[in-house]
Amino acid sequence: MEHPVSRVLALLELLQDRPGLTGAELAARLDVDERTIRRYTARLAELGIPVRAERGRYGGYRLLPGFRLPPLMLNPDEAASVVLGLLAGRSSGLSVGERAAETALAKIQRVLPPPLRERIEAVEQTLGLSAAPAAGPSPASAALFTLAGAARRRHRVKLAYRDREDRPSEREFDPYGLVFHSCRWYTTGLDHRSGELRTFRLDRIERVTPGADGFEPPEDFDPVQRVVESLAGAPWRHRVEVELGVSLDEARRRLPPVVGTLTELAEDRVLLRARAQNLDGVAVLLAGLGWPFTVREPAELRAQVRALAARLADWGAEPA
Image 1: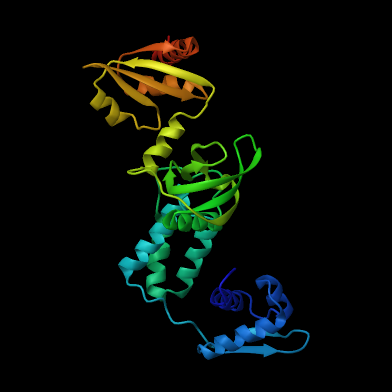
Image 2 (image 1 turned 120 degrees about the horizontal axis):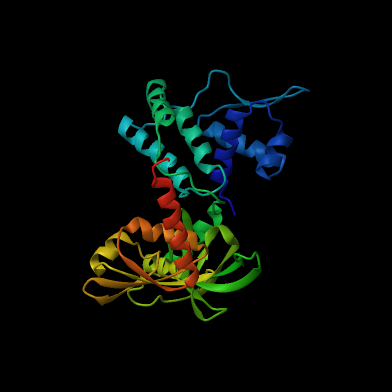
């Protein structure tokens, strides 16, 4: 249940954004009754934020004329850090909710002193990011916070989940941790339905219900490593095995664990095992590494490598 203080602050936001809303309109937006709205406005008055209620056809609730909230007390470095964090979170997918980063940024800018607000707006309007914005849905904040609390307190939860085929399921789950990886939020832990360690995407979780049962995660369990390994072993269409003519240390430096697993065959020979949905991307990856390699399987990957080599030869040929 949302805390009453949160609702009072939400009322304050509505009064600033939409002055003149009636008691019925405010009650509908906050999912309370009109009597509660009157109580909230009284609470704002106690806090030194006077609200005027006007009767009649064009009446409604509004802040007293000339009343302004005090500036947010951030120095330039603090304000820049907050705004840059919001912009980076929006681009990377780290933020939650559909428009949470945008609305938070607008609220912060609204209460900054004018000179500082102008500087922050200049940064926002001129900042360029080398990575493309994250695509796809963001997780709901309720799921994120509930799982984080359960992982910290070591309490089991119930998940309502939809898999990549959009098939629904319900399961009991011990969340060992949360991981943000490659523009996605994940949770990993023990799935009691399968009895195995599983990784779930937060944006596919429809509902999280806290439970009372406790759990103890395995000693030295690393959620980040587990998520990366589980994604590398995802059941994509093709199983890939390629021998790379490079040392294990160099291969690990250039190839992150999410690409696949690496096994040393000799001092200058490594076996890459991976899963892939599209083999043309694997061919481009291998060509870009600049190392000699031998495709063990599948045969279709060898065909993709030859096709890529032919295209590169055509593109690099001098015109007749």
